[in-house]
Image (tube, rainbow, N blue to C red):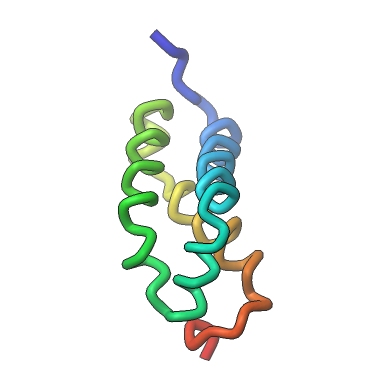
Length: 90
């Protein structure tokens, strides 16, 4: 059995790692979803899969009191793509 990420720092790093992978392996899909203002809808399956992976590896007590995975989506994917033209930014 794998050791769960049992500190906020480890959980946050793990969330960012998963979201970076989503962005790296789906770069075009992420960019198109941002540009068409359908980011969360178009990537919902990838986010669900990533969240499932995240939650299976993080201590349940940390999951109860944090939103690191959601924050990583914003910080890692959306913020880094803020240069793209999109109605999201309006």
